[in-house]
Amino acid sequence: MRIRSILNKTFILSVIFLLHTKINAQDSTKLSTFIYSIKDKDTLRLDYYTDPLADTANRPCLLYVFGGGFITGRRNDKLSVPFFKKMVKNGFNVVSIDYRLGFRKAFGDPHQKDAFKENLKKYKPLQFLDIFYGSINMAVEDLYDATNYVVSHANDLKINPSRIIAMGSSAGAITVLQGQNYIVNKNDLSKHLPADFNYAGVISMAGAIFSMKGDVKWNAHPAPILMFHGDADKQVPYDKVRIKVLLFPLKYGFYGSKHITKQLKKLQSPYWFYSVENAGHEMSYKPMEHNIAEIMTFYRSYIDQNKPLQMFSDKKDISQPDVQKKFGFADYLKGNFGGN
Image (cartoon, helix red, strand yellow):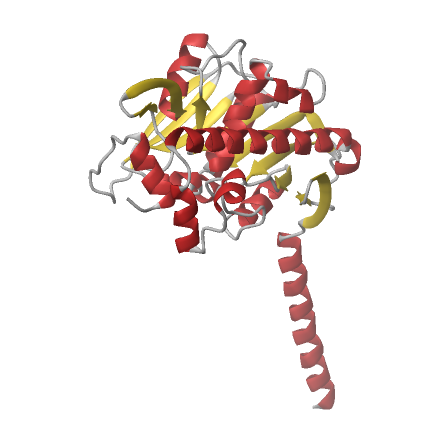
């Protein structure tokens, strides 16, 4: 009886060990954190996710920029990390970066609502737009510096520097789209990148490009771009919004995925526009859970196989009723900051 008891305990311990080993084998992701830049009082870090058990040293890299309206957010939020681990399983090394939050610097902590609203009121409309543009440029500069760090340490990070894909959510999507536009237009900020560098591809989840000089221009063909967007998004324009102050038209405009798609189509540049009818700003994060297959198809077809494709996927969220889809800039401000 005693021998049988010992054998039973041994069997149980063996099963527990095997289960533990299986669980660990399912998630062998390793996380490392590095400082990539120090700017005034801001110490900017990046998280690096990889699979140390993988035998490939030349893996593609997904470089991720979080969302949060340039006022909040973090590089390791609970929605993003599971996605990073899934992408590691799919053969990528993933880098998720800090960047400076320009709106937070100007207006303060949004959780202190009264003080935040008072700070917002201090700025006139044109001043607000200048801060918005400055916040985007600040984020783009940090994206470029992080990219430069990754390229400079490509061997240590075991990534292929010619296979870096910039991906962003909401404000992060604005950052990667604006960053791609600056590269092809040779904006001065692109000097922060290695010489002649461009991303292998760009993935935008509810992004847009802000311009103070009229319509968006593309002086060369951009990298292949995958854009996810809902046509009822009231935080980032799905199509475009031109901005007026006191009824005077300005050259300021905010150009979303639908408008960018029209431009890329005319340019004969590769793109994939994944549009969801009646979906709102949840398209800034839902693709990380529901569209990994599309993201992998984008990588294999547009980047790995270099196919010159132009695709438009028109989906409809039938769980949602028909909702408002036309917004002005004031509506987008309210959608992001609340208030009247």
